[in-house]
Image (cartoon, rainbow, N blue to C red; front, side, top):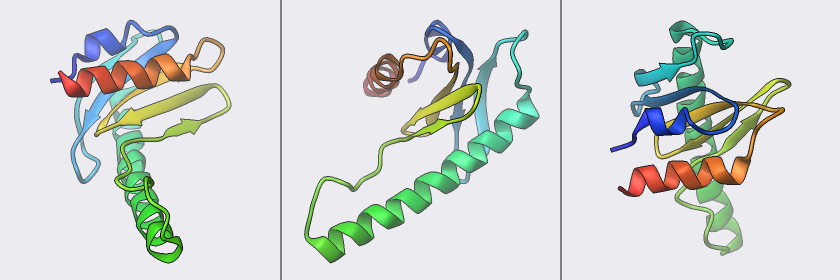
Length: 116
């Protein structure tokens, strides 16, 4: 089980979340002083689910057309914005301030949490 409180300890974290297959926000931690609220986080979760579906379709198509492997299954992605970035893995994610973000640490933390 993913410990969202541990994800909130990442440098620059303003939110950590879990979403369902359809994108609905399941659980979250939000920095009260941060830029997000539950409504915005729910919309972000739907965007994460949609992007994962699109990336999965593209990965399967690429593998089918080229014979290359290793693109599917899609485990997660990073969305980089102007002020914040979102790193996702296995229906969990964290929103980080760009001036403090460490993408590799975020991916490692998410992967470790999912494997526990």
